Length: 451
Image (cartoon, one colour):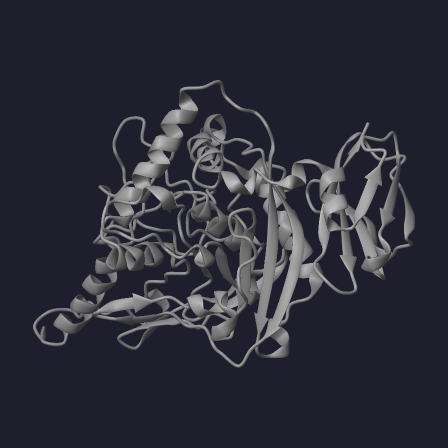
């Protein structure tokens, strides 16, 4: 239930490392390589960077999220399933960074499983936490993949005067890829993120995201972060569902697509569950730090990529709970992350109904409208099994595919005709996604409702 990785935690670590050099009478504080602090997620540094540029940023973001949560609690619980369109930018320098399409599709499936609590390993959630975990009823649909070859490299840098994040990956003029309509799309940038180096010590960085900010209502004298920076950045080696990342000082770590799940959680207003207080970076649990979520257990520091079910960094006596290593917002190993709590879900849905409402308030809610705007029509919709896709002549050659809610492919990509019949007979009634990818231009997605 905590994390507040202040920039001063890094400063504290650096000062401690510097101070120990003059402590000849005591055991040095500098940890060996295998026990170095690892900061795989730069969310908190992103917050601190914005706080340095725009004083009042952190307080304002917290107020915006709390206002959204309060407003949501005041009305009837909304069980509507929210669908977020996703644009993935693959910014690559070497061929291995230009990840294949199947990795991206697998990542969308992992996101959908996690935010609908449909991942098979939910059975591993310990009984003590079952009463507080749930289905966020948030889904994701891939609308475009943009690939950009670059000569740039992307690395966060730390100095005593401030930290710089590799946001140039989000701008074409700086060797990256410009965001696509960030009000109505979740933009995910995939690139090679170089390690963060602090006084010669390296920490692997897997991703980062900025929290939501209500741009029109900033405190007087402050400026909002640039809208074109909104979204998630992840390392190319963690995008997919069955990968391994060789982390400095830790060796190979199994990756199951949950880094992106974690970063999207930040993007939707969640903080880390575990403690990033002032002392946590030095290995001393900080049980005063808090993530602002009532049903996550108190946790003094982040897990170090393990699945230790006996870990309890804040023993608070009777009724105390162990650390929730199952939570997506911890630093636990991805093979044991499987849950969001109801309190976390309340925050994310409130953010989607408030500061990030543009994500769910877009034309994708009407499949015929979207198709017509993109150069085609789909009918009948709803249908008992047969759909007709008519594509306008100017679209030219295209391929189409159909997936279910969890990103699983029903009809693999195949060349389409100007008048294309799509047969979903035999599949269960429900919502499906038709994706059309022209040879030239952006792909588009339409919902197919099967009765």
